[in-house]
Image (cartoon, rainbow, N blue to C red; front, side, top):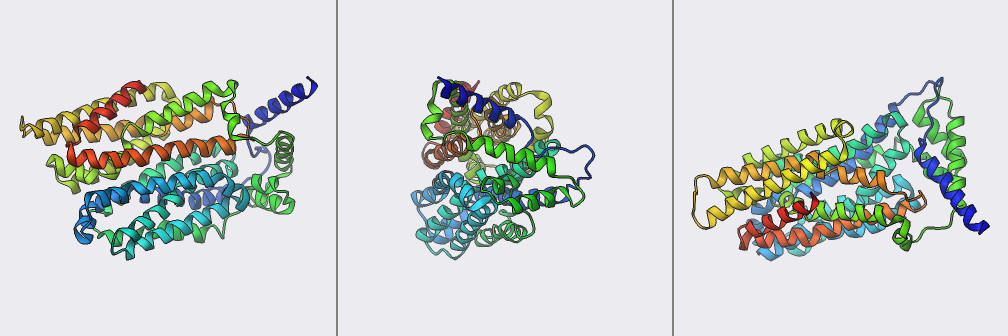
Amino acid sequence: MSIEKGMEKAESTVKDEVRAPLVAQGEKSKENNFMVYLSTFVAVCGSFAFGSCAGYSSPTQSAILEELNLSLAEYSLFGSILTFGAMIGAIASGPMADFFGRKGALRISTAFCTAGWLAIYFAQGPPLLDIGRLSTGFGMGVFSYVVPVFIAEIAPKNLRGALTAANQLMICTGVSVAFIIGTVLTWRTLALTGLIPCAVLLVGLFFVPESPRWLAKIGKQKEFEAALRKLRGKDADVSAEADEIQDYIETLQKLPKAKIFDLFQRRYLRSVTIGVGLMVCQQFGGINGICFYTSSIFESAGFPADIGTIIYAILQVIITALNALFVDRAGRKPLLLVSGAGLVMGCLLAAVSFYLKTYEIGLAAAPALAVTGILLYIASFSAGMGAVPWIIMSEVHTLTSIQFPIWFPYRKLLSHSARFPFSLYFSVTHQQLHITQFDLFSSTMEYFTL
């Protein structure tokens, strides 16, 4: 009984410290946040690389099919295998970040993305294409975990919310840039542009410090203090911050090592159910099928693919930026309700459009309905369902930080694992069933979200 009380007391201490800022704010210290901004900029290059990988297949589909003479099944595998690689990366991301450090994990994922883009550039057939796509997917999976964790650990409390929001914004920007420049560049040249954020990230990591929290965790005291001082400026008093982080790490070490089955304890049932439910609705709502094959959707609808893709890309960035500004004011649940309603309407409009086109009813109105539906869909997704589920899961779960390295990659694994079969399913229904069945299924999932 005394042991159990001691464990509960230790967990309570950890929860209290989790709510406290990772880096204390000295009122009288002269802090300089330049290195924090620089480190964040370097880290979100990984987010931009993530978006570039996700947005690559849409504007390049026709060119790759024509030049390499691929079948529908071969290209479907190429488009979908990205998410299979991301699943593997999500599983490996936690152990990699703990063993190699945050910067080490970023370097490894950058190497995988670089190798993948080069493989795609030199590909002359499906094998090298798929290997390259799988490699970039692995890098995506690692980026999706390490980037937000690294930013959260280096940012002061007053900047943490805005800087972590930059992660999602840069992912959307990467997707949008790939969509836009993909309309004027060849698919091989577009693959080379994916190397740019990788190069910036790789070079930038030489100039930014490692996460102080990770250095403290592995017992590198001198490096920990040096990294903290570099982040806060040479004139800042970091003694109180250093003591706080050390106390935090010592408290964590007193707790038993977390296991995957800890997630299924009864006291965590509600938070895990909410997290899993939001991820299922987010991924099975159809975002990846629409994102991966935007150009072919507009072509099938009879609307100019280049114009539609550019409008899609610009709208996505604008709405995502506005969401980052107003998510705290509007509230989580209202944004999810509005977003879910818009997703249902967008899917239904697109489904009606292709139904009319299939049975040659009101052909003049079909393109406008399809374009309106797709744009309403991406605007609604960017307004709520894209980012809010991640925020809610971070706020409602009661897991201790010792269980965080298991829970967070598990959420990422669930997210990426849902994408693989769904994006593959979309590519088949898009060609064989004129997208109507896909949109009806997606709208049904969003209805259950509401």
